[in-house]
Image 1 (cartoon, rainbow, N blue to C red):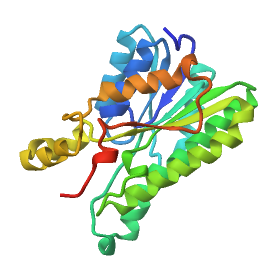
Image 2: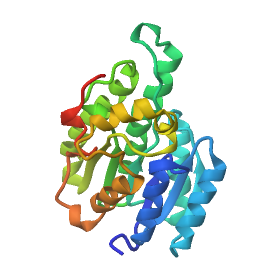
Image 3: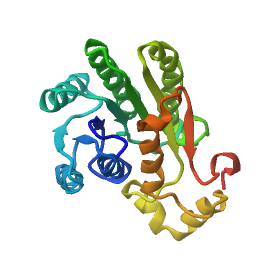
Amino acid sequence: MKLEGKVVLVTGSSQGIGQAIAIRLAEEGADIIIDYRSHPEGAEETKAKVEATGRKGLVVKADLGVVSDVHRMVSDGVQHFGKLDILVNNAGLEKHADFWDITEEDYDAVLNVNLKGVFFATQAIVKHLRETQRQGKIINISSVHEELPFPHFTTYCASKGGVKMMMRNLAIELGPLGITINNVAPGAINTPINKSLIEDKAKLNAVLQNIPLGRLGETKDISSIVAFLASPDADYITGSTFFVDGGLLWNYHEQ
């Protein structure tokens, strides 16, 4: 129970990786603020599983691409639990398109959630921690594509590359405040967002050929390292990206 007494906000925690993180951190003793945008039933499922561990859960609807929603999400969490200790920036989206076909609407949709949302959620938590004179932790769920090119997903790569440099910069700026910030960068994970890949055997086999460990990652592979980074065991770690990809990054090649 390394997180007993802590309050954690997990954005995009109604399904997939975010849901797994919320449940795992609750198992470690934390109370959880569960954010969702369009899956209320999933958010309630997460809450039920959090509360099944004996911890408390709060469901908040917020679009991370809208700064006023971000501010409300944080203030609602603080009002309910009295404080916030840890932020997991998990919410994200991607859009497939040739570079020359990307619209301003698509660009804004991806960058607003994946980069602007992370920026302002982090800012809101930092302001709260400064006002209450407490230390804290920020964990961003980035992607191997903060480092690895991904043709036809330029907006996604741009957003994750931005998160990488934001994290590195804030590690220096927030360090004197006792606030750590790190990225977890998943590779190919078995989640609902990858359903079409999983159901297409040819595409799945092509991806598996790029993964030295020979399998897709599971959500528990991500939630485990997030639990570590959120714990006191990681108090001296900041400014780093942890790739959880079965070796994909250094073995990847386009088919």
